[in-house]
Length: 351
Image (cartoon, rainbow, N blue to C red; front, side):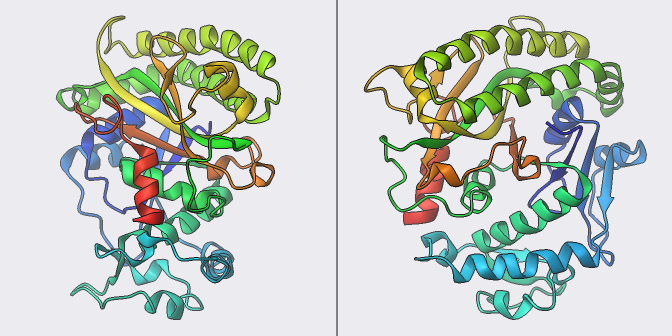
């Protein structure tokens, strides 16, 4: 896990609760801001900017030129177009975020321009393009990526995994799965009532604990990806259950906002996971798409089956491709009280 993140897919950070939570996990939050645009920030976001915790990324020629062909090849290489690329909801994309060689391609999807000159595009096309752009920006600056939008988190996996899913997302016999690893009660749910100044102070005082938690998470995700033995999968779970839980409790204690039994928001990371890990967790005949708790506050569940697991990369091999979600709503949809990430992706691909 990197020390700083790139926020996607928007310019404005409209959710102050999300920003405060992000500051408790990472040293800095970066965002892509076109040179001619001034973000419409709230006072609390501006306070974080003034303390150098929120930083602007100025796009460079290399950022734009490297993704133009990649995104064009991705669109041209689709065997079939996901339903989400023909969806009837629209979003805006600033023209300064588009390379001139790619502009004609995106214009084919465009529905016009806003009064401020933003290109009006299907929402998922914007998300897809912003994935490519944010990944290149993150890669060149050694950043991870994080969002506050559960739909963007799910849909971006289609692009981050190079469309390595087909229309049969629920193949329970696949060699591996793109999964959501969820941590409950990591961050205070009532963080909106905590002043930004207190959040900033807590973040500064917990740097060592933040690093220790992220190190354990990185090690665990690597093992989930590589494991090819069901027996060894059980060992991985048992070894990391204790280490991750301890690192999580140390982080909470260092921040001072949550007591041991307090209810908090949750944090999720998308991880490639071998079928052997689910065999170890669920046993023969278990369903990877059922959420599984492997500790009192850690849950894992498949979002989609890979078409070819051998074509995947671990987060250590491709750290800028990692997607994180900080989710702060009190009521969740889907199975129990969790977002239904698999259903969001299914809707995007098959409508």
